[in-house]
Amino acid sequence: MLVLGIESSCDDTAAAVVKDGREIRSSVVSSQDFIHSKYGGVVPELASRRHIEAIIPVVEEGLGVAGVTMDEIDGIAVTKGPGLVGSILIGLSFAKALGYARKIPLTGVNHILAHPFAAFLSEKDAPPAAAPRFPAVALVVSGGHTTLIRMDTYLEYEVIGRTIDDAAGEAFDKSAKLLGIPYPGGPAMNRLAEKGRRDAFAFTRPYLKKGSLDFSFSGIKTAVLRHVNTLKDSNALDETAIEDLSASFQEAVVDVLLRKALWALEVSDTPDLIIAGGVACNSRLRERALELGEDKGLNITIPDKKLCGDNAAFVAGAGYWRLKDGLTEGLELNAIPSFF
Ligand code: KG4
Ligand code: ZN
Image 1: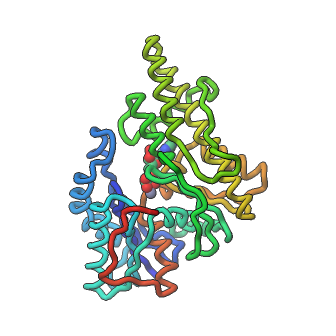
Image 2: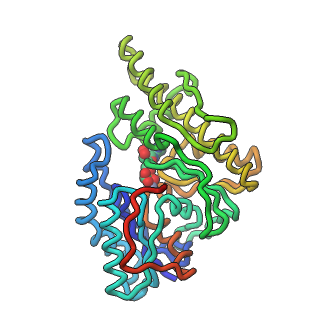
Image 3: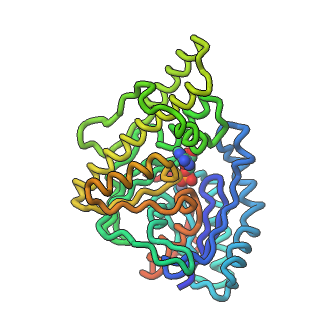
């Protein structure tokens, strides 16, 4: 079954063609970073306008790279939320119109629940990914969400933890902004952290109560602000201090993410962990997760970096299982901007 995935929930317009929920035939992502970086965050109105310009060429490119026409597409999977309502509606309306006109089954996909499906994908002609087994715990760490999900099957899940304030990626981006790094600052902070000392600055680890699967990152972000102000007062906010601060901040975030993921595996009684979402590109998180997997005999899957950030391949991957099960939707399908 060839599924066309369409994603437009935030600031990336993406299309992909995926075979049988596993094999990526194409994955095209048109980023809007160049539009939003000067504003320090995503400007919703500009994002929607750019999606309108990009959606047709991006879908055409997705089909072209895969070497298929719409006649060969068996189903369409589109992100229905969560995200910016104006952005979601562009991809959603386009997908609905396309499905209706071509009489192709359509399904709406939840973006956060779809992120972990990147772990089941592999490139065409590459050996198939060693897929996680069920039940699995998925840690989705993105710009808008930090969520722990217990996946019992491809279709059955339960959200078992989430952030009560900032998401991990948001904490990276806001902390980076305090250091003068343009949006999205997460990747740049990661690069700076690679040169810094991880124990140079004190950061408490907000575990909330022992065993809690919820997250809170706003305190760590405020601690960055306090350190920045102290450094500025003594004229010491130089390159080394920024690298050290980035490394110390990053270590605290990674400690919390992995500790909570471990607790989630314990209560779910499984060794299978998927880490997905843009923050899963973080080199320290990837390194520490793999060490943890070896130490504790866990089966930890972190998708390729290009599949961790937003793309439509994981949307097609998640949508495949819904379409296969007959979970299709018609023109009544609407955007659902919030997760809870
Ligand atoms: O999943 P994603 O592409 O979009 C959302 O659904 O939000 O995640 C984007 C987030 C941004 O906050 C970005 O700064 C963060 O992922 N990010 C990183 C890294 N690469 C992307 N954060 C830390 N280290 C990275 N290497
Ligand atoms: Zn995302």
